[in-house]
Image (cartoon, rainbow, N blue to C red; front, side, top):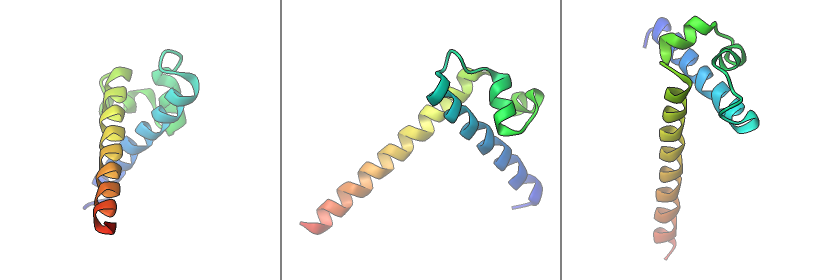
Length: 84
């Protein structure tokens, strides 16, 4: 992967991480796009290069967290099956 691609992925991840932290501390309604951008260390315009809206970020976070939860459940089930 090129440095440019890695930098883009990092910015996207930084935005998602910042949004998750703000959504879980301030709540979705009180979180602004500007707040997410500032917390992520990017400009508001940069936010819009990666996401269309705050709702878009929320939807990606829901999918990401759901996937993590499902993978964790599958791993736990596999460990349980191996132990029996």
